[in-house]
Image (tube, rainbow, N blue to C red; front, side, top):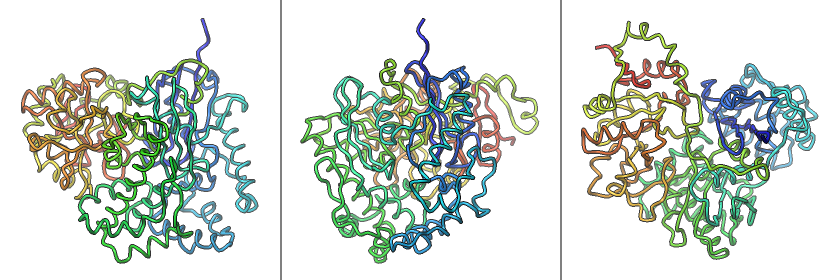
Length: 597
């Protein structure tokens, strides 16, 4: 019997994560934040690694190989956990006079890097990496920092897993994005153009790949794509957290008036241009942060949001049109952090040169380890496409040990409830959180860690915002829609796969009132999760039961978490969120917990 080929890959940047593959099948993937409860956790993902090994039922020393999914990262940024730790002022200081502006004048900025290394603000507990190599000399020598950080990462992962250091690899960032984007969806079987757009990774921020016979080859690349930078600075200048709240800017954009958006966009349009399949600098200022701050002084907040969205869509469309013109390809897979922009994906999907487009679930850097596993398995056996994102912790392991009697002292507990029972409560206007089976990987709740409500009730939005999620008032929710009934509610003439809330669609007027709470309140678009009959772990049956009660084959679906916290992972997390919010019920498997009184 041939020996199994098993690979584990890790990401240590913000939203650190791990994934494991056995014989071409991804059997587990998890984000470290789900275990530590620190949003956008950064650093060595020990708990996620442990989970993956347990899911694969193997010891670390049994792995064929393990890998980091980025070759170079700034060690001081990982140590400081910059993204979850920085305040808005810290971001402004970094891009302003405290660091970046000084570096542009040729100053060393060593005092700033010492601050990241030494200040109590960044003295995070329980580091796995040994950062003693971060001397002043290393901080002041980028080449030495690369070598020292590579050695430390290799040593740490080898020791943690019980592998030889020769079994630890480093995979190019964009190669991981590309392999995840291709193997995570139904774009296989024909030649596909895989387009990666992100902020930065191993010296590039845009790549184009030809996928043929399940092998990917690079056909275009650029290090001058500023979509991510412009969107990040817009987020910062609008008073929201970069690398986390860009989606809020996207949600705000439709409220702006088109004539003002176009005027504001003219000020940023010259930054980039498309040159064939690549995004290149045009009249880009050297100091993009201060340039944007200056040109936006006369612009209203909604016009800024609309302008950066238009800028994003125009550049991305230019790339896909050029790819089609040069290659004849009409099938695309889109990945990288910028592919989280669902409105951009909608515009791309509507291009005449696009017959099919696949946007993977949660294509930001947390998914790099999944792509890394597919990359490592090349030549070792056939890669099996990812059929589901239910790759995380399985709450079923806890069901036999839950203290139901203890919970029943303060809550109403009903065992053996049916999908019909739950549907009746949803139809009555109750808000229900569902904790079921394996956790979804990534940023989108897909029914197993979701807060659910009747999508026809506008008041559901206000109730969830005020009592549970504390979301910004202008932000839309999403909804889950039975795939069998999708044609009655959304405009999808190309029959695009939409399993992961990754593409926006226009809604049809005749069914709009039935799904109003799950749509964007201004432009009436939706980012649906089309739920298939198979593989939904009972979620299809719940929505179908709601359909039988109300005639609506959909549920409002938002992630099961409190504002600023990661999506819940286990029963403890779920009970904390339930008791700290205005949720009416918590459904764990087939047991319904209700607030007393």
